[in-house]
Image (cartoon, rainbow over all chains, first blue to last red):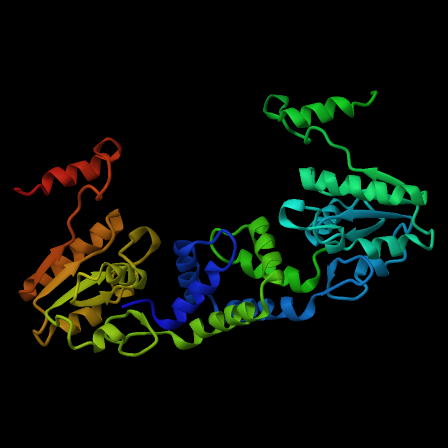
Length: 198
Length: 198
């Protein structure tokens, strides 16, 4: 005997999620059997809605339930700066900080010759378009501190600087709360290179 | 800005699952956004179906999509033995072994005075009923090797033995493939106590 079909199907769906193997999927499926019916219905509805109701903002490329997204629509935000990120998740992390009040632009990836991702695969033309009307004074590049992220930052800087726009990059250095003892060489190098007078 | 509502709801549903915290839930929710629509629809359907289509077998207490369950309906199985387990998941683990061909009985818990679980909270009366027609010759108690599992096994043995039924318990000892060095004292004690001539 195998699992009854309804359980087997649910286990199969759970295993499609990242980091969930067969054993965890079975544990989750059995947990769902004992969950209150309303929670399960809500869960199912949330799955369907997330595919149905989310869209990509045509201005900045962010994932949103409105188009343009809430951020692009918000006129109280500083319209003179655009922070460029790899991914919509980065926008949400930065928004949690509640200290940045400018606009965003989501690239939807990074340059990666290894994986065949070139500039034409990224949301770059829309960024160039946004710069035309000269409202935007500064572009802050916040791609990840990886080789691909750095390469993408360099590419964008070279592309945008000739147009006379101020292009900046997030600071690199020690994480707040981290030990120098455990920091890697590149981070230490960047921390020394970017040192500031106190 | 918080997450857009559809994402926030899905994250909230994921956090209701065991072992999934806020960060993992967010990672899974964003993964779902990029999943093929058919996979997401199937997932949602599987969640709803698992609540709708599963039932508890009125004979053995197993979780099944039929009532009685496939195992109780299967006349080719050995009708003379019943293996008693705590939980429907145990039935599925034992069935994966493909070596046991008797029937099952799911207690749906174990005796636990600490958590206020007494004999009346377990699926015991149905077990007593099944023993009335004398088809069943042996009851194999396969509760877990925990304090509660042991207590439940003792309770059942005392309840059933006076009725003249053979009551057995799964062997305890070293797991196959395990090192003596890493075995705990109780397991070693049980392994020595239960030693067999070779």
